[in-house]
Length: 75
Image (tube, rainbow, N blue to C red):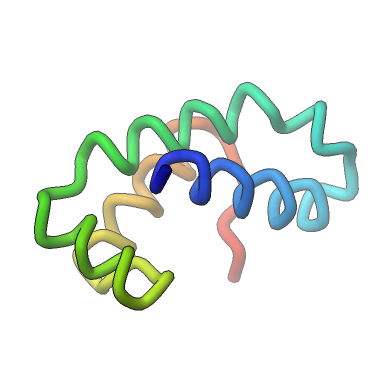
């Protein structure tokens, strides 16, 4: 469920940032969601469930996977 939420958020954000379709960022967003969630500890996953946001350490992992999966950083 967490991976799906991260994937959906990535599709929306990256398609807007890159000015393209959601289909065009499907594979990179899948890479991002899988990598980021797999790198998270149970505590980080629970914090995400509680707040709907990545905490600082999980956010750093997310940024690493944004770069690894060739996506655009949102800032």
